[in-house]
Image 1 (tube, rainbow, N blue to C red):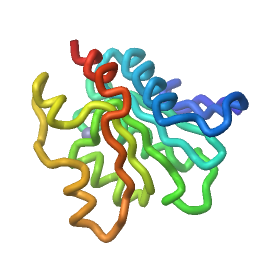
Image 2: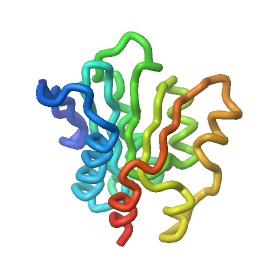
Image 3: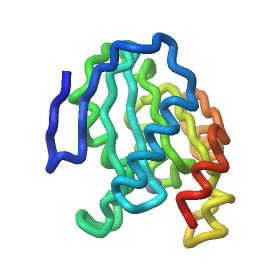
Image 4: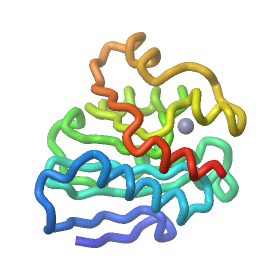
Length: 158
Ligand SMILES: [Zn+2]
């Protein structure tokens, strides 16, 4: 399955090879997306069948809230799922407070990222609230896995 929507930025694909793909597989896809968008920020939302939608940061085109995670969440209706908590969001950089709040509102069950907000802050503006802090102040329990392919994600800033 391959669906293009929203100016070719969001894609659903179903890959049949490699069962049980490791987190690094998906983070490397997030890195490729970031490069495609010419920013350090790429994100994917993956369901239990390993179908996924992709996005990168489009703030230059779509305004200041068009972070990769926001862009991918806006398209989550394109994915097949029964419970939102079964979805995994992969992102090259830890979600900022805006995106992490959106992830909570969306009820996404897992977040896996490469570089942290602290890492990203060395290269530009950041709001220093970690993703785990946002979750701790919500009603949800969200699994957060950090620093997958961190050095590759950091290279995106250079
Ligand atoms: Zn964000």
